[in-house]
Image (cartoon, rainbow, N blue to C red; front, side, top):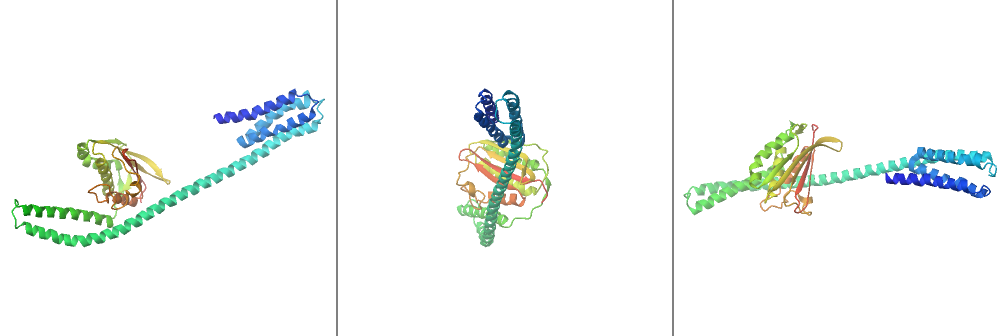
Length: 362
């Protein structure tokens, strides 16, 4: 706004200054008056480039009204220029205003067109880079999934034999015997390894999705009830920022619940000394599609900048006892829903996981 007033002051201030010289310079100095008449074109052209045809015409009309008394009445007897020449000069003020205004408007339209083209190209480039990242991630998940499936099957067979042998050997020793306790430990560790293998297989060969209209808030509440006691024990407060009457989203409730549970458990574990988990849901568009934006923000230990690009990679984990498949599975589930998931965070300042789920049926 301040810049606009400065430009108007410059335009009309120059018109006033030129007019003052016109009226207060002796009419005997006709060469100076010839110069002053031409100087009026400068503010007119300037107004055309800044404000288009209307601004230029307004300026030219003001110039015509100010110059007309000097041209036809005040100094008409002493000014050597003829009446026709001065009349044509006034006509030219307005013609130049229209022509310059049209040309300036056309140039402005071309600039805007090029600017929009550049913005469109930039957006296309960004989308292509995003698609490239998603394609690389999908190829990586596919390759690791196939590898995991092969390893899981190869390990599960001897593991079953080990577990059966442990159960047979345990019968020969009473429960209070030290060897029985060792065999029981082996049996328990074999079960844990079997659960890890099951996780690998579910990652390698995900089950088909069962899409149906469902309320995201209701599913989230069910998952919150599962971790409420764990969050309370860790002194973590869960704060909700969403209405319950959200639009229904087409989703697999079981898989989406798995994503919610995983993200909330990670947030609770990232706040060993307590903190706050804020969950927000709002309607938001993504690439022209309507959907729901979910944010899971914690006040925990945060994420190192070097870890951010790898968080959704399989087998990458910052936990001592983690498998590194939790977030990779979440990424795949959200991808199968046609949504998006990303994360931001800094060390010591918590982390925020952003999910976007489409409302349209896939």
